[in-house]
Image (cartoon, rainbow, N blue to C red; front, side, top):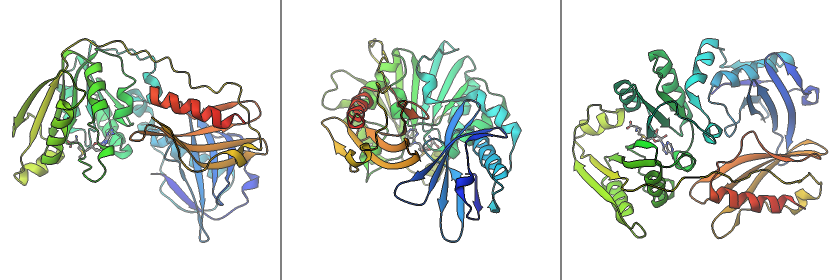
Length: 392
Ligand SMILES: C[S@@+](CC[C@H](N)C(=O)[O-])C[C@H]1O[C@@H](n2cnc3c(N)ncnc32)[C@H](O)[C@@H]1O
């Protein structure tokens, strides 16, 4: 990821304004360390850059939570800031490539794009955790009239596949760099043709991080059209039995499952090739959506009603996770933007799929920075609790 190492400098000389292609919105001081945050905007993308300070040198780098998928925007912002404030650069891995930037945007979708989404294809399939993208690209090339939405939580994999999609000129792939478990909850009902989950991470020691769960199954059945299939392919004996147990388990009233062992597919992914070399068994589980589901209406409101920053807030906020029946809220860090304005970093929502966000507060109001939470019922419950905490 792009970053520069720089000499220490007087950060009070950083003032908001337009610098090259970058609009600098604010600079904020971490309450608990010497580090600082820069709020920046390029075009429609708003994100944060971090100044991490050590005795030997400082780092100017991206912030993981708000990082745009187009890595060139981060490079551009770091570049513009370093030129504008005449920073002494000791080391840099920045090499701005405009061509990549202009191509990347067409196939990239953000979580917020799915709020009122319209699909330009009649048939849509999803691949969860596409990794190297071999299967995703193969499917898209073989079914050019179907849209393939690839959801991948690992940013470098998402970026790499975006580049391949562009180079190959494939027009029926969207890449979403997000947690598939959350994105699924935002998709309309009865629409998808197939959901592929190939070689998910087994997470034997942290099962709460697994993609497959009862709620993932329920959401998959909802978004699939009647007759559509969820397709799990795994080399993990444990995961196979865990998935079967989940698909047949308590609370699942009706299900249609087909199981295959060591079935050869037309395309072998990078992971599969490795398991095949080791002569491991491979299991497929197909779950068919047997009925029509109710429409999903996303009408949760994530705005903060007339909440303004008050200095006493920081003394009253809990700095440890607060657990409620079905959600939690954890205020993790605070950054001071000015005497009358702060940036809060927090985690909240469901225990197995927490949201991580920033909230910006000043004397005029309060907003999520730089994007809204995913519109799920649990996130909304947590949002109402956050609103209560901030309303002092
Ligand atoms: C073992 S790799 C398999 C990659 C690919 N499907 C294949 O067969 O080669 C699992 C992939 O799932 C991704 N992943 C894990 N959890 C995810 C989640 N919640 N949402 C989206 N992707 C996820 C990981 O980043 C990783 O790329």
